[in-house]
Amino acid sequence: MANRTIPRLLQTPAVLLLLFWMIVPLAMTLFYSFIRYVLNSTVRPEWTTPSWSNWRGFGNYEFVMNSKDFILAIKNSLFIVGSILTLTVVLGVMIAVLINRSFPGRGVVRVLLISPFFVMPAVNAVLWINMLLDPVLGLQGIAISAINDMAAGMQDAPLVGWFFNLWPVLEPISFRATQTSAIAVIMMVTWQWTPFAVLIFMTSLQSEDQQQKEAAVLDGASRWSQFRFLTLPHLGRPMAIVVMIQAIFHLSLYAEIEIVSRGNGNKNLPYLIGEFTNNNIGAASATGIFAVILANIVAIFLLRAVGKTLME
Amino acid sequence: MAIVAKTSRFSKIAWPTLAWVVALIFFFPIFYMILTSFKTDADAVKAEHVFFFTPTLENYANMSDNYDYWRFATNSVITSVFATLFALIVGVPCAYAMAFNPSRGTKDILMWMLSTKMLPAAAVLYPMTFLTKNVFNVFDTHFLVIFVLCLINLPIVVWMLFTYFKDIPKDIIEAGKMDGLTTWGEVKEILIPLAWGGIVSTALLTFIFCWNEAYWTVRLTTIDAATLSKLIEGNRAPEGLFFGRLSAVSTAAVGPIIVLGWFCQKQLVSGLTFGAVK
Image (tube, rainbow over all chains, first blue to last red; front, top):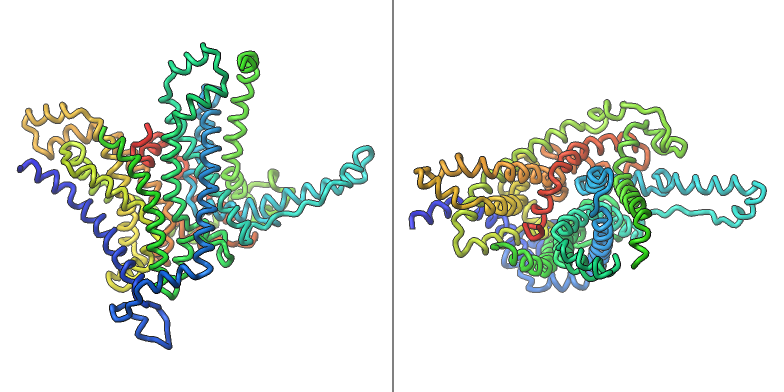
């Protein structure tokens, strides 16, 4: 039994640290979610300190579920996460198949492609919303006004002038409005995470059964049916992993939402929790518990998939 | 289907070209950021200077005056380095024990560790703020940032190291035992030399994750321990006046990490998929 003690001792610090990290704040959140707890209240000063006597039962949960912002935040979270997942998986598979061959400069292509993944989220958001997407001063605004100027200049030109007279004046899109800022967030996160999907799919493509492929070629299978019936099924598992890992990361998307859409209606759950935290801790905690439940639904599937390969 | 075979010369040129075009499109935002960082703030928003301009280094020279860049960068370096170091100090023994003396509970512990990573940070925002501000009095300190960064990355560290250690043949360790090595001797003489590559790439990847972390570093700091994420987040809406200098500080914040990232692409896959994709 002595040789069991040392391994246990070695694991203890990590386990204890994570246990503390997980249990203490979460237990507090759970407690706060069942009591009335606000930071500022002149009418009911007793609510400003957490205590069992302020018990509210499921009141905070009801309050949160009936608030317009909560429904909006859930819908918005799902819209953003769903769009990002679809785009990154589709683009990821296409690009991985595209570069899964040898051609000149493949190493450089890989390096260029993977780079966006290492950009810190804050820089990603600031770069896209200002330098690239700003409707006046960003690249979008500059490009659109340049196209408009060019079209206007060509209207008097002989032969092709009529064509540019019909050309509509383009309007730049402001990405700081409620709906468009969700799209801006989707764009920037897709840009950042498609490389991740590409990397995973490429790793997986390299373990594809080449003999099977050669047999398919000999049988006269087209490129498309090779892809459809061999490659795509082979990528099934990595796709599931990419979807689940991204779902967990993007459900707690924060910096991008905060930077792009501060002050407008484009909220997700973490952002809503941040707003509630300014005063209504009870509501913030209840929302937090909802977020935990949502994340757990995804996590269960992911853990099951990961667990299968763990001990082989 | 025969079309594919016939056009093989076409596809020999077309597909690689397309691959290059896609890669350049993906890199373009970074390129544009770097380009803008060499423009004056006035040039940065002018159509005629999108690609043609007189490059200037003033944005980089003025980074300290404009943004106090080096202070935030120092904080980022200190917190990321020490968080990585502590995560390894706690993680290496744990992964070692799990890989070489697995018990029935090992798998469950690993899965449970992973599940802590999946907890949405925002759910515990207020308790963390409260505990750090009012109970432990560590809000906005390096210690706190290091502690938090270490903990949120610990599961990934243990997992990555575990997958590396698992692949080391057990016979070698057994042979070491025969030769009378102690546990510490095993670690020093056999494990570390064999797993060095794995430990280094785990460290690099953890460092990158720490550097880019943007929830706790933003919410649990104000000035003293604020990292680059906080700096950039605080300058989120420059209204187009400072695109040049903002690009410079952004480039400086992500440049070293992108280069570092190029060297650990492979480890990224195992690190982020927890060994589930090979």
